Every structure is written in structure tokens, then in C-alpha cells.
Image (cartoon, rainbow, N blue to C red):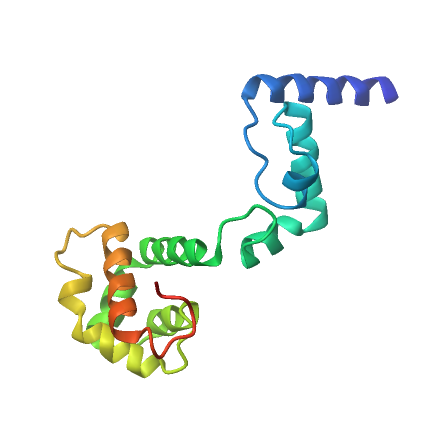
Length: 157
């Protein structure tokens, strides 16, 4: 049995070495195992996964993880892409679940104000029926920055 486990472990390491593991990601593992070799990346990924430090680092912007501002932008873009029709409908009417979600991401306490502001800027946020999620989220970010930065706690630089 030990021999079988050893063979599986060796084959996994050899396959992963040829697969080009790349960065194991941010977290405690990236701080402890800074070497980019395949074995170090496996150890770093294992450390990140078992300690939960990667999740914490991503949330807080620590342990070699991106800053929360960058995460917020990618969260909004992912959110818009996954909910494009609902975001479009809710912004058009100035209320709804997606408006509440957007308000939460930006730290806005008054989702009604966010809804009315986004509704007033509907044509700016959705300039055409074929606007991409990336364009819509960038336009949304610009409206939030220009019209709501004083009322929301998230950084809107």
C-alpha cells in the first residue's frame, strides 16, 4: 500500500512539473515558499489551502494579494457579467436586488439614493444594447465615483 501511495505521489509531482504550475497564488504559502519551483508551488498551494490564509489575504489585500479596491472592481465586473439582464432592469427602474448588492459592495447605506442615481445615469451606464459587461461595470464605477463617492464608504478613487 505504501508503495502504491509513493508511486501516486511521484507521478503527481512529475505531471505537475510538466504542467507548469505557475504561481500558487497569494497567501501565507507565497510568503513562506518564495521559490517558483514546482515542489515549492505545491507546498505553497497546500499551505494556502489548509491555513485559509489565501481567503483572508484576498479579502483584506494582505499576504501578497491584490488590494481590496482591485477586488471590488473585479467583483463588480463579475457580478454585472453574471447578472447583466437583472442589473439592466433594476437600474432602469431604480430599485431591486442588484441595486442592493451594488450598494453593499460600495459600502453605501442608502440603496434608494444609489438606485435613483443609477437610474438617472442609465444611458451612461448602458450606452447601447450591445455594451459588454466590462464596459457596463466601468461606466457603473465612473457614475459611483462621480455621483456617490461622498455617501459610500468604499474607496472610489
